Image 1 (cartoon, rainbow, N blue to C red):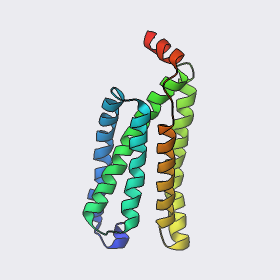
Image 2: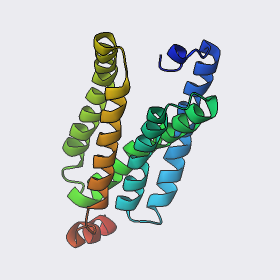
Image 3: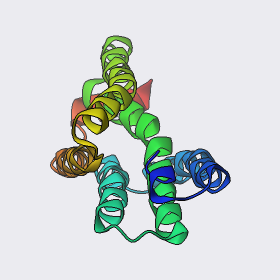
Image 4: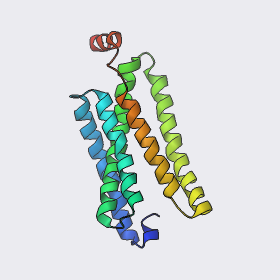
Length: 166
């Protein structure tokens, strides 16, 4: 809807949206490869900041397809990485004993957000005629998420050695 309200055709908007799907697969592969080589806090911090970068591009208001493509790529990469990074961090920081419950809670929170977000966006647009407050809130949440990842410490030694033995 944000693209069509700026006068872009549905074909163009569908192509831009398709980039999200393609790059979510790419994000999954890149994040998995990266986690094998770099501490997950840096991988999570990097991928979590990407939606903020996309939101800033959208808020700047450059109405070019290239800008929207870059934003879609950033969002796709982040979407692809979120489950992998979250799953990996859950096992490394909390162990396998609590994995099912904790990952289930984290996944439920993500799913609720994905379901409620469009409803809030639609409500905001209907109320004030703009997606801008929602885009700003997503940028802020993305920055906060990135900071949380970056403040994680090293993996707990007891869990790391036990996980390696399992």
